[in-house]
Length: 262
Length: 262
Image (cartoon, rainbow over all chains, first blue to last red; front, top):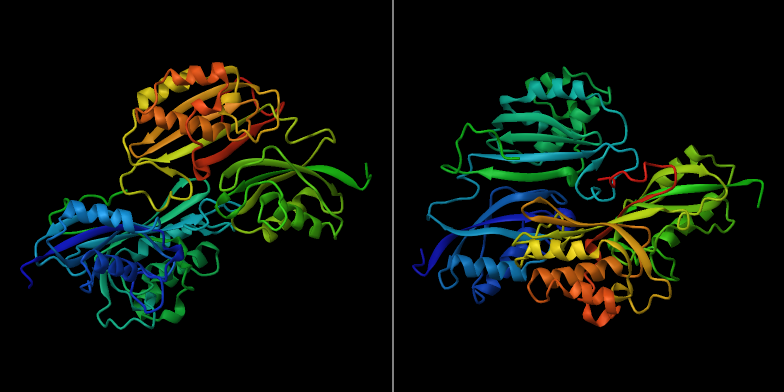
């Protein structure tokens, strides 16, 4: 460990529309890549690498992504925050910068994460939400969707809702919250809170629930997918732009039994 | 008047970010130009020209713009609405299509219009509002702004708040509503309701009020600008992307003394 460095946690919000996702990919505009470039410049050229709490998909958004890195003490938290606000573009904003204990790991230390998936149910489509919500003008049986959600909550093996590209073998996770909110007549929002999400898990769940809501799949299919782990029984992967990483909870931050933040 | 035609009113919402404003300009992407192109195509090639209630600026938005045109009876309202929903892009949406009396004129028939101007007061800037709100992280004295707003409401000559490019000579208009709403700690929204707006009127008023809110101009300057009609005394024109045409009221639509719609 370099004595001139300390561990820094950076909380971020980004509009994912113009990003090829979180994870660095050569030649692509990614959130991680952009942030590493700017941090490297601010550190005076020493390559800076960061860790993220979760790899959001290309086109998906975040209101509360968390990253961490080892960074020179020469720029304190306040000056680093100010510098990042100045150099980062309008579609990725550093919400908070703070020094943390050396053992902090944005992914491994996370207790749970919350994702939301937004639907625009209006007939015409709201131009102000088209980047952030899946336009779904066809009627949905919300009751059927809610019955499906009720079958999902709990500790389960999520193989049937995981992308085949996922290399993680242990797919048991505890989904603490799985609900549907309808704040206005033309808006519906899924909310999922889990101790860990697998590749495309939320989008595959939403794609399946939308098929159920359209009457194209029985509610009982949820149980079948969970029992067999057969991805082929589930619905399609819902579009990425409706998805948003809302926030992440770390130890000591909030009462662990408190309801999720809005 | 072509007996095979009727007058049609089209209510529209658009995200103005990628438009060079409402008004047709050759070689530019404008809302009017795009709509006329699509209507011409739907009419089978006969050039269709439309009138708009107001010429929104390049980068400004609309939730309730109104246009009207003479259009063939071959496509009834419902089929025309459906066709427009299909062919128009995600950033301009037809909210409603309906046949109206032949004398309807979206601009001349309008009783009053409501514009809002949004501010994002957060320190970091919200990436999800950066297209729709002016980011203003510096402190504002909202009380001073409200005192300035109180001096604006009423029937006045608006020359001092009108762009020099404006060719309209009679600049007397009645501003029925001029208020500031603060729905959250990081959001402020100006609301202006008037029987007619002049070029850059809202943006010049907002630019002046922001200078007052920063303590760079006395509240009494408002009175001076109104009395002298001197544009040079007012503040700069606030950026277009915070501005949104919220809605327009026509005779018989609502109680004329009712509060403006949200």
